[in-house]
Length: 303
Image 1: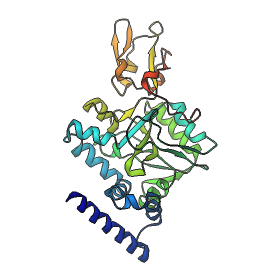
Image 2: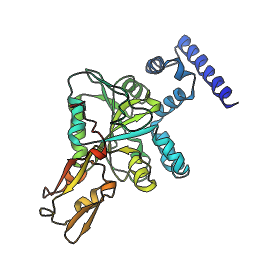
Image 3: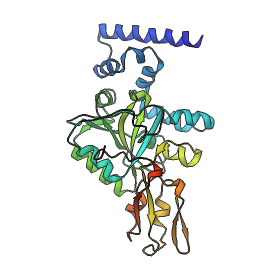
Image 4: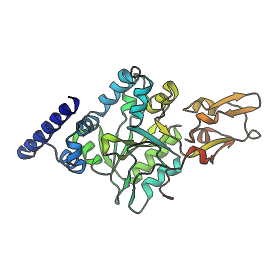
C-alpha cells in the first residue's frame, strides 16, 4: 500500500515536471537538478524533499530544530543523522577546499565519512561558490551575526540557491570565501563540510558553525546524536604552558574541556578536533594532534 502511494506520487512528480518543461514553468536550475538526479530519484520522494530543502532552507531547518528534533526520539535522530551530516574541518583543511587547483571526485569514502549514505565528494574547476544565509542562525531568537556564512559549492547547488533565493544568497569568488572562513575562524566558529541525501547524496556546502546556533552541535551535545564526524584530530593540552584562564573551556563547542587546579583537561570522547580551542588560547598551550582512532581527515591536499 505504501509503495503504491510512493509510486503514484513519483508518477505525479514526473507528469508535473514534463508539463513544467513544456510550459517553461520550472526554473532552469531545477531542471538541471532533476536531470542530474535521474529518473530513479524523480520517482521517489527524495527529489521532492530536495526541492523543499533547497527552496525553503531557513523554514525547513527552523521546523526541524524547533519542532522535529526535540520530539522524534533517539532512533529518529539517528536515522536523520545518517542522511544529513557533517565532517569537521580544521581551518587549514577548509581553506584547502577553495585553493585546490585540480578536479577532485571521491566516491564511497567510508573511511572519511563514516555514514551509510551521502559520501560522494566532488570539486570541479573553476570552483563555483555561493554564500547563503545560515538556516540554523535564523532559527534562533537571539542569533549570532553575521548570518550569511554558509558556503554552497558546485553545481547544480549554486545555481539552485541563487535562482530560488536571490535575496539571501550571492555568488562569490574563492578569495571572498577564504575571507569568510578567516573571519569566522577569528570569531571562534568551526568549519564543517556537509553531506545530504537530498543533495544528490554528496557534499554540497561548508558551514561555519557557532555552538549557540548550530543544529548539528546541538544534536550532539544536547541529544547525543552523531551529526558530525571528527576531523581526525584531537586537542592536546600542554599543562606547563596552560595558565588555567578557562577561555578554551568556554569556547569549546562540544564541552570537551574542563578546568582543574593544574590547568585544563580534555574529555577525549567528546573532542572531535575542530581546533576552536587552539585558536582561542593566547598562550599557545593547546594544539591538534593526529588520532587515528578518530577517523581519517577530509583533507583534499592529501586525498
